[in-house]
Image 1 (spheres, rainbow, N blue to C red):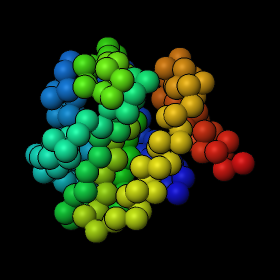
Image 2 (spheres, rainbow, N blue to C red):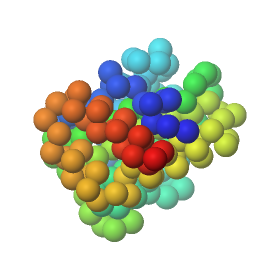
Image 3 (cartoon, rainbow, N blue to C red):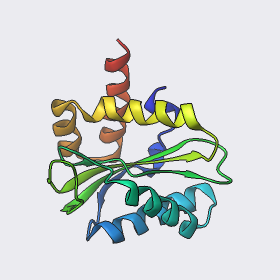
Image 4 (cartoon, one colour):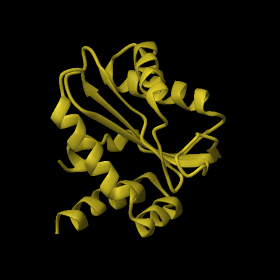
Length: 154
């Protein structure tokens, strides 16, 4: 699965206010709820429930909060670069400044895992992460994210 199959390029955010983890999740739930026509509180509850199982802070300043949502009809991804890093309880202890939100239908087991794997492939490359941090516009971020897909496929 490629990022382009589920990443909402119109929802790429270049300087989302960080604040703290709780306010970050609220912002992500609001953005996704607006785009998907879903109640943000449903998304927020699912994100918090997943986070209680273990931090989705994957290290190197990257977090991939994810959840399965009843009533969602497709896999949905959103990328945000935060204006200020947020303390996240990531596995390496580093604050987070790059966030990939992933929402999947409740019954999308294998597809959900494939989408997580495609995000993971992009985020484990330190050079790609530095380019994402340095991109000046939403279009540049989108090109980098889609380009990372192409490099990975080669």
